Amino acid sequence: MEKKREEKLKKIEKQRMEEERNREKERMKVLEMQQKAREKEEKRRKEEQKRRLKIQQEQEKEEQKRQTRIRDEDKKRAELQKIKDHEARFKMEMEKLYEREERNAQIEREKRHALCQKKGQTQRAKQVVVNEVTSSTSDAAVRREEREQRPETALRRTRKKQKKLADESMTTFE
Image 1 (cartoon, helix red, strand yellow):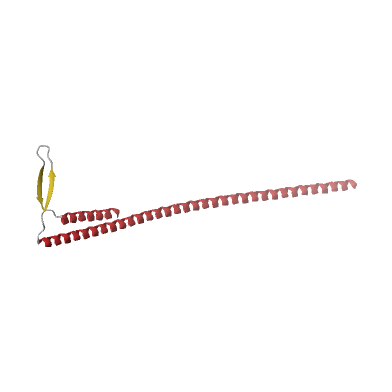
Image 2 (image 1 turned 90 degrees about the vertical axis):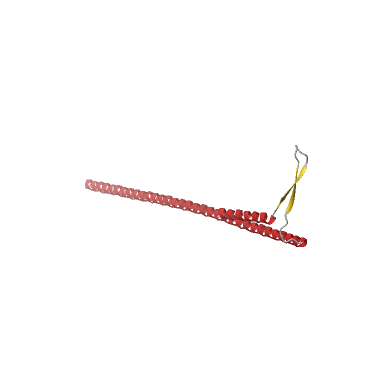
């Protein structure tokens, strides 16, 4: 009986040991599964972080491009405004110059008219221009040239040229 009892005890002990090993194996499997799950979760988290970082970098790059484009557009706008301001100033200066020349020409006409009326002349007086010419072969002689000079015509031509140049410069800016 004792033998049977010992065998029974051994059997029970063996079963208990077997159960203990099985539980240990189960626990190890569970631990392995948990470890794998943690690793898988860590890998997924890293992938998500990489994806977010990539998206953030792309957004920053796009923002930088947008800022650069805006800055370039602002520079262009400022340059165009500068050119327009310059054109406007130039046009105003040309108009002032034209008006000043027009006034001067009118004053000159009025002076001539007053002189002509003083002298009793109604026609334009011929102006005598004296040109002194010295020649090495002959004596110093004074030649007189008589020619009709019309300063208002010359002024008109000059003003027309200036106005034409101003108009051309305005069209080239546009």
